[in-house]
Length: 276
Image 1 (cartoon, rainbow, N blue to C red):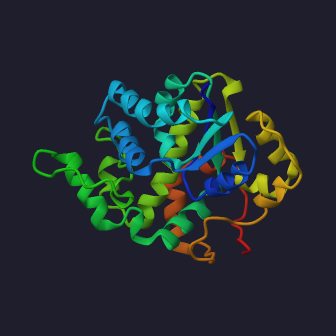
Image 2 (image 1 turned 90 degrees about the vertical axis):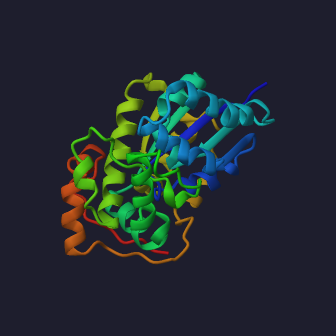
């Protein structure tokens, strides 16, 4: 019997590794963090940009996720990955019983974490230019290899910010990513039945055991009070440092993020520091 699948979708740098650790400890759960990333990240970008169609996406999802879920001996199979955020319609169609958790974090903290901790692994100038050249003319510029640094979404050719994006700095590209990926998640999850989706803020999971219990109940998993302790400490920290945005970065984030902080419930909240 196949396991029951669930997917944690987010912008990344929002607690996906933390959920991986917490849910991996639940008996009967096979839990992953960015499962088969060298397949899923290029797939996600190509799908978002319209470089492949639904049929090809379904084939690749069936070969990777379908096979893994089918042959799992667990009762639940989960993946916590920002890559999945661009594939929600395809995953929902492939797995009609799957549930989705939209995990969010204050965009200012996400942008700072990506910018300071991932360095040239995320939207660096060279890798972004290589992908952009391929998207512009694949006959002249072959696709880059399936390394993470090359495969971060670019605005679609017909979007209002397509031209502006080409002049963005690395930090501005990261801000665009946070706003756009959450816009996509909100739009796609709104098309699914309410009982298949859950919205949760990382800050709330850290603040209240009741929020953690609600997450477990949504996924039909047993909850123990010890689980809350995992959420109280940061995870997936390559360098234990926290930096607030400077004045220029705050202005850039505000200009690019638009109303997304308000839509996600962060309007009026002061930027906080992370204690490691």
